[in-house]
Image (cartoon, rainbow, N blue to C red; front, side, top):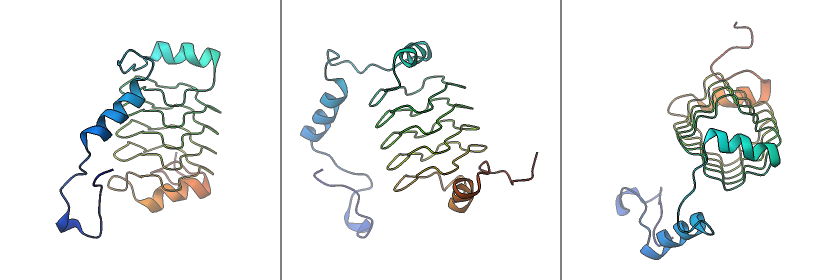
Length: 169
């Protein structure tokens, strides 16, 4: 990166990161390699078809897809893009989501028990009712503007759903 976020010198940096044209084109090239320069975003039907054949959906683009109640348990979802996706009540038990983007996704009621979410981006995600029991959230970006970090970490350690006490119905 030519210039990235600098949290210590906020006044000396622009309001958002600045990337060179080369860096942007390089990232687009990585995302479109082998697709005729077209980013392929999977639909619900295509995700279900892929899951019938493999548990490896790493680096796949599923943004804005309606993936309610899909079973992603034990899947390799490293660097997958779920931005803006509807993943309500989806099952991510023991899934590998390292570096995945769940930015602004609906994760209400989703089960991430035992999942690896290291370096994942969950910023602005709706996580009320989600379960993170024994999940790894190391270096993950959490939606702490919407729900406190303590509430999320309580789900990791106690197995309670986010935003719900252990004894609520």
